[in-house]
Image (cartoon, rainbow, N blue to C red; front, top):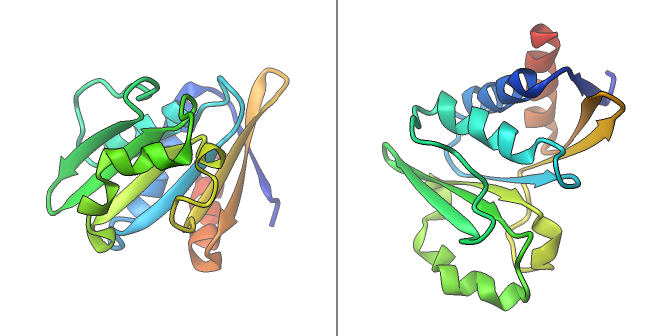
Length: 156
């Protein structure tokens, strides 16, 4: 299996997010790390994920608020952008412990800023620039990684 997925444009990146949401629909509790430099497509992927779950409001990176929670049915999706996090201790000011892990999906941009304060990721999605395109590398729980790769090969 090729471990890099080429993302052709923003629409393709959103499609990856939608595919991820469908793979996780029977598993509401998950922690997804979205890694990559500025402009790599982390928020675009999160937008696709949230759109697939029925979110119609604008989806922007919560750069200044750090957290944008979405209540979707019986579960929550926490879209986090930790780029401006000064100290990992600030995370607990967000009352993250009030979200039951078995009913919460975490989409975390810039997870490395939190040190060891975040839960272990279920999936780690690394986005990078590659000339005019972007590439995606997937790591994490092997069954989910394989399911996502299979789904994404069908998108190409």
